[in-house]
Image (cartoon, rainbow, N blue to C red; front, top):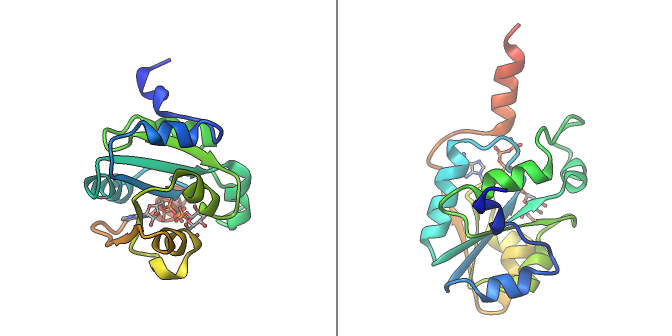
Length: 159
Ligand SMILES: Nc1ncnc2c1ncn2[C@@H]1O[C@H](COP(=O)(O)OP(=O)(O)OP(=O)(O)O)[C@@H](O)[C@H]1O
Ligand SMILES: O=P(O)(O)O[C@@H]1O[C@H]([C@H](O)CO)[C@@H](O)[C@H](O)[C@@H]1O
């Protein structure tokens, strides 16, 4: 197993693994189905807000409930987590099966919660929870107009 896979932990291990990370800890979450430049730029920017970056990835069942399409996710949760763990910007990866990452945030209690600028921090449960305990919630503006959905549409347009 490549060493970067050591960055993947279970929910049971999460609190202890986060406690061992350099502070401040930044946490973000998402699907990350087909990784693209928008994702890696945003993850590097999120990491730069603190000293460590934790990424919570939606399980395959929770992606299905998000309604991105019957064929989504294309990559399994195990594969998506391995790709995320291989990134220099990422310190720790965990999965979550709930509809939101609220419980992950409550377990990990990061100093900073980050999400792409397509979200409003005071309108989502994760952002509200971090603000409520005195942490910071940061929306990172998109630098590159990319999305997994657009990539898929492009691939499907090739006959
Ligand atoms: N182009 C982008 N630039 C910066 N951040 C992004 C970009 N696209 C997505 N993100 C952020 O990355 C995280 C994961 O997003 P997600 O996997 O939903 O990306 P996506 O490519 O928009 O996917 P999909 O098209 O399947 O909805 C989210 O926090 C989102 O805000
Ligand atoms: O990759 P996405 O679709 O941006 O990730 C979702 O983010 C939601 C957000 O945190 C608002 O709650 C979350 O609820 C959902 O489970 C996905 O992680």
